Length: 250
Length: 250
DNA sequence: GACTGCGGATCGTCGGACAATCTGTCAATC
DNA sequence: GATTGACAGATTGTCCGACGATCCGCAGTC
Image (cartoon, rainbow over all chains, first blue to last red; front, side, top):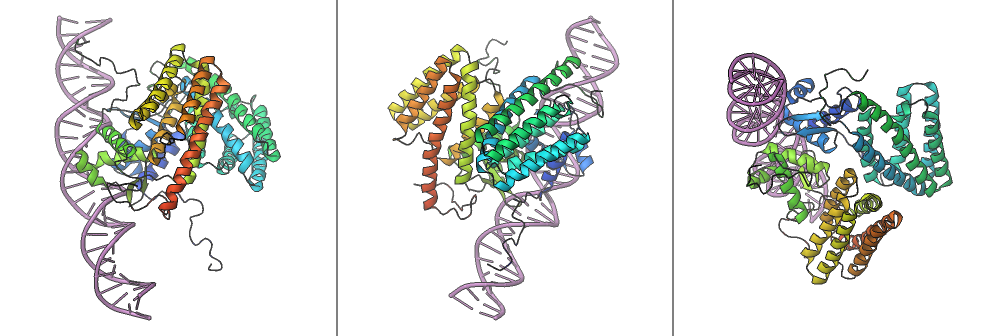
């Protein structure tokens, strides 16, 4: 007990400092993919990435193995990595599981989270509603991310957090977020408020139901968007549509 | 069709043909870890693996990235990969999620699986009971694997199958299977029979409940075993106990 | 128009190399 | 005797260059 020093080091957050180069590469490529810099189906040529990032092939390839385990890229032997493209069926499975896991996370949050966390969730929900009113897609997305960070950070199960974060990355890949949908937005906000309310009441069952329902509704919208998209661009080769750089569905 | 091919088409199982060397390395090391050849906490020296497997460091390192994504090995910068060691708390989280996911898989199986699959599950369950009677741990484990293969192969959600398979690998790491427990075994078998019966009745709710309960019961036994183990060997450095090669708790 | 063959583009794998970093040992110090 | 600090060994992180294997698209042929 050195008086002031409960925290002499930065070990509070868990400190995932990307010490190694390969991790920086991994983070950079993941960010680029989720940001849409690389379109689904697009090839990722190793040497090009090396040049872009100023690293060797070894580092790039090791980073690719990680991303391929996350299913953000798909690699077929001797063809190299391509940005993953999710089929409608995969999306359905993804959302179905997400509903289950998010339901579990919500239930756990309701029973285990601190009062402070519950309060923070409520404020984040209000913040989201406010951002939605502003019309800024960017603000909305950031507010939603903050909301989920609170939920996942206090559900008491790091494993489910990690899996769900992986899901979000893959769903971002779809570019079919229900939040874009102006018609769906008010319902979405209402569902989240219901969730916050369930947390306040510490009603685990209601929280689980609200979270699951929210995901299932989002799923319906997303799948509809996806189906419409696939109706335009033929999904003949599921997972490897030849897409030219720099443009996407207009 | 060259006439002589016993495997003209290995597309039945999903065909994970380890075409590339790195995948063979990955499979070999994963098998070795789950088989207990490498003990949890044990370091995996790259060059040693290279020598053992007759491959280059690049291949080994790429395989390590995959295994590290699966959480079968843990890597800290400049210290290299070590076989993952699961803490009691991680085990708790793992089992909690497994209960949720296996419950979902069972529910999905009950509603979607073919009658043939349901029949196969029943037979596999009977087979398991028979193996249990024989007393051969090996036969029991194989029968249980077969049972799960049927469940996961016909639940209609590849994603949940994959995640659960990853869980099983990590749980195997614990060497704390409830099936070993002679006292628990009859209950375990009864629970599985109840699950098979729920499938036969196509009762999704009962199936989900049975599967979840089964996992939760197994969890209790496993955690108890774990706690007892940890009481012996001090878990001072969670994840990096200095363990010598070739031996484990006797 | 379908088939064949060729060449370029990439990947898969290897070996070697070097600095950076960690670990354990051992001596010097208080 | 316990602590500190320096040293050496071991191992990783990263790079480079190389080579054959494989895939893809294109030209030429029947």
